[in-house]
Figure 1 (tube, rainbow, N blue to C red):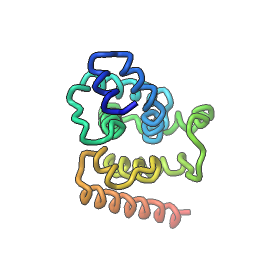
Figure 2 (spheres, rainbow, N blue to C red):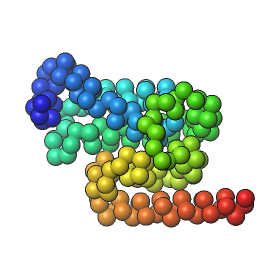
Figure 3 (cartoon, helix red, strand yellow):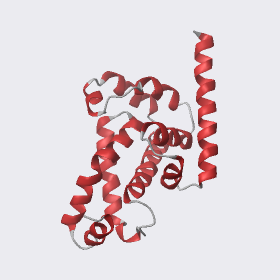
Length: 176
């Protein structure tokens, strides 16, 4: 079914919104998990993402893909969580002790636990840019839409993030 028609139906039909959840749940959860490395927190934030999307569905203008709208809500929820909770060390510890949570993430060539240590040293906006472009395979234009930034600003954020990441890794290599 056409995404726009499904969203229009979801304004009055909760079953149609359930179809939207079914369609995008895995992608939203995966993105949140890659930012938090906490399975239970990711489930909660994913649920909250869809609740907010439902609550504000009538404000979605359809200028972008709906998944971008969802990932933008998720990004805001993640950033709010980290600002309010200040639990970065607890999240890392939970991740390292949670072998079963690793089974939920598609395996690929990235070592997420290794990168997580370095990503958490960067500002949230840089974490978001790297996660979207390198772990979620979004291009810079798509990342810009999700982050609510212009293409040029997103490129600058990504460039700064990669530069800062390189410095952090070099520091550890020198100390090794």
